Amino acid sequence: MQEASIRDYAIIGDCRSAALVSRFGSIDWLCWPRFDSSSLFAALLDPIRGGRWSIAPAEPFRSQRRYLPNTNVLETAFETDTGTIRIVDAIPIASEEQTFRLLLPEHEVVRLVVCTRGEVEVETHFEPRPGYAMKRFALRDRGKLGFWVDMGSKCIIFRSDAALSIHADSIAGRQRLRGGEALRFSMSFSSDAPAPLPPLDPWVRDSIERSGAWWEQWIGRAKYEGRHRDAVLRSALLLKLLTYAPSGAIVAAPTTSLPERLGGPLNWDYRYCWLRDATLTLYALMRSGYMTEAFAWRDWLLRAAAGSPDDLQILYGIGGERRVTEFELPWLSGYEKSTPVRIGNAAHQQFQLDVYGEIMGAFDVGRRSGATPSLESWALLTALMQNLEKVWSQPDEGIWEVRGPRRHFTHSKVMAWVALDRAVKAVEAGFHKGPLERWRKLRDRIHRDVCEHGFNRRRNAFVQYYGSDALDAALLMIPMVGFLPARDPRVVGTVERIRRELVSDGLVMRYRTEEGVDGLPAGEGAFLPCSFWLVDNLMMAGHHHEAHELFEHLASLCNDVGLIAEEYDPASGRLLGNFPQAFTHVSLINSILNLTLGGSEQANAQIAPYRQR
Image 1: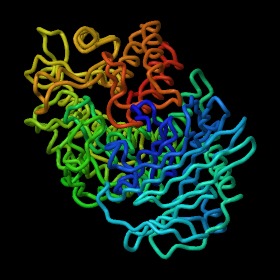
Image 2: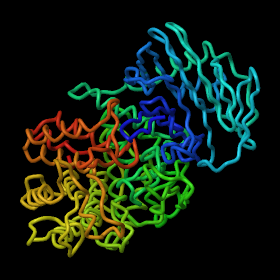
Image 3: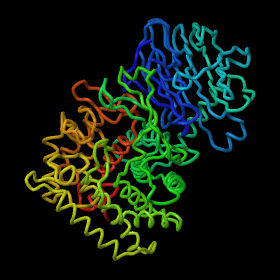
Image 4: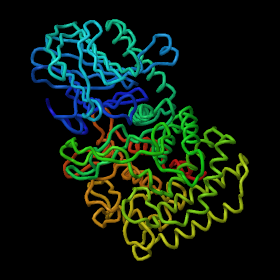
C-alpha cells in the first residue's frame, strides 16, 4: 500500500461527516457519525494501526481523478498494463423528502468499481479500527446481510457483490473484472437495530446519481460568473460540505493533528466550529449568493452563545457543545511521525477579542445582503457590545491562539473597532436601536488607541502587539476591514515590512515563530490565508499586476482536484496542516472576487468582506 501525502487526498461528505480518499484508492480518514466523532479509519494518522478501506488494482497502476462536474462525488481512473477501472466514491446525500420516502440509511459510504477497458484484478482491503483504533469490535459474516462490525449498540454493515472473506479483524479479497463488469460496495452506519437494506444493484448507482443531483442543485444557486469560476465553485462546494446540517455549524477542517511542521508538535484538532472561521466562511458564501446558510449559522450562534456574553467562547462543538477538552492519543504514531495526536482543543478556554469583530462583521454583511437581524439576534449582538465595552482594553490570546502570555495584540484591538463600527452602522441605517453616541465615542477611542500604541514609528509599521517590534501578517486586515485606507502611509509601511520580513518564495508567514510569542517551538510553513490577504492588499493599493501574479502562484498550490491546506512549506514543496482548510478556501474565494472587481474606487469600496461602505 502506497502512503499518501496531504496533497494526495480528496474529500467526500454529506454535511454531517467526511472521508479523505487518497489517489491510491484508500479511504484513510473517516469519523462517524459526525465530523468530530471518533474515527473508524485513521490510517492518515497511523498507517499501520489506524485502519483504512482500500480498493485498487492488484498490479502497478497510474491514477487520475476528478470530481464529477459540480458535485462532491469523486471519480478515480486506475490504468494498468492490462486495462482500466474507474472507481466512483460518495457519501450519499439527498433531500429530506427522498430520505423519508426511500428509507435511506442514517449514514453510508458507497463505492462503484467499473472496468472500462481490458481486464484488471481488483484488490479490496476493509480494515475498520473504530474509536481511534482503540474500541473493541466483533466482525461477523452474516451472509446475504453482509459483514457486520458490531460495536455494542452501534453497528456498521459492509456489503459488496465482490468475493470477500474475513481475515482476522479485516475483510479482503481479489476479483478480476473485464470490460463492462462492475463491483458495488456499501458501508452503512446504524445506531439502532439495522434495517433491511435493498440489493446493491441498482442501489449504489442510484445513491451516486441522487447525490450528484443534490450537489448540482445546490451549486446551481451560485451567482459568480467571472474568472476562476471553477475554483470558486469547488471552494463553495467544500465549504458547504464542511457545514454540519443538523445545527448549521461550520467546521474549520475535517481532520485533526495534520502537522504545521513535519515531525513537530504543532498538531491541532480542527473538527469544531470556530466563530472566526465560520463567519469568514459565511462572507464567502453570502458573496457567492448563499443566504440560507447564513440564516442557519445565525440560528446556531444564538443557541451556542445562549446565556451571558461573558461566557462567549471562540470555538464550540458542532452541536453547540461548550466543552471540547483537549487530550492526546499516544498509541497513534501521527502523520509521518508527527506527534502528539490531539483530540479536542484547549483554545475553547481562551479569550480572543477579535471574535467580537468577526461576529458583528458577519451580521453586517448579512444585513447589507438583505438578511436583516431578527430582534432575537440583535438582542444577542447588543449584549455582546455591552460586554465588549468592558473587555476591549484587556490583553488576549489573539487570532493565532498563542499559548504564551496574553498581550495587547494590535489585530485584536482593530477587530474590536470593527465590532463597534458595524454596530454603529446598523443603528445609523435605522434597522435597530442602540446607544449610538456611546458606541461612536468608543469606536473613535479604540481607533486612537491602536494608532498610538499599535504603530511603531521606528519600524514605520503596525506591530504584533503594543510595545513590540515584531510583525504579524494579521495586520494585513487593517485596510481590508476599513480601519485605514490601503494607501495610508502607515498601511503602506506595514505591507512593505511584511513583504520584506515575513515572505518566503512569495508566501506569507504569520509571524517569526522563533521570537517565542506563542509559547510553542519555532518553525512552521507559510500561512496560506495570509498570503491571499497580501493579494487583496496589493489589489487595493493599485498593484494589480503583482496581485494577479501572486494569486496565480497561490492557486497553483491547490492539488489536482482543487483542494488546499492551511500551510505550505516552500523548502519541501509540501502542503501542511489540517486539510482541506475552510479558512484558506474562504480567502481564495474572496481574493478571486476582489481581483474580479478590479482597482476602481467603486471596486475598492467593496473589495473585502468587512470593508466599510
